[in-house]
Length: 80
Image 1 (tube, rainbow, N blue to C red):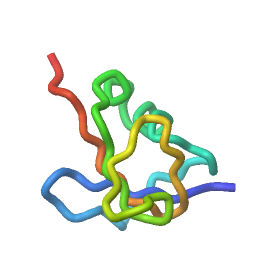
Image 2: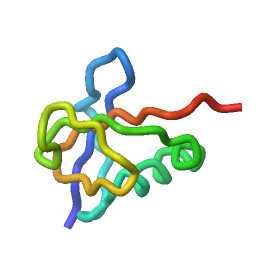
Image 3: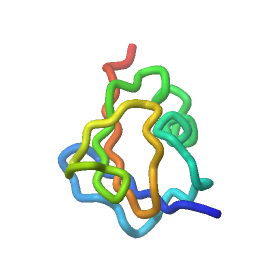
């Protein structure tokens, strides 16, 4: 079973044309590692819109489990 996630860059609209397809039960940490390994190291918080969020948007931590068609905006600490 798979879940479709959509990414949202800061200050822009979500990109609904190309979902990130991941297994059901995927957490923010898994998504970070799938996009780029530095995202997990530099992770600060994520904003989530969708059924896994209790309110819109919800600021979540790295262990938050995502659901189908969630929109995710990853916030990272500045890199070196």
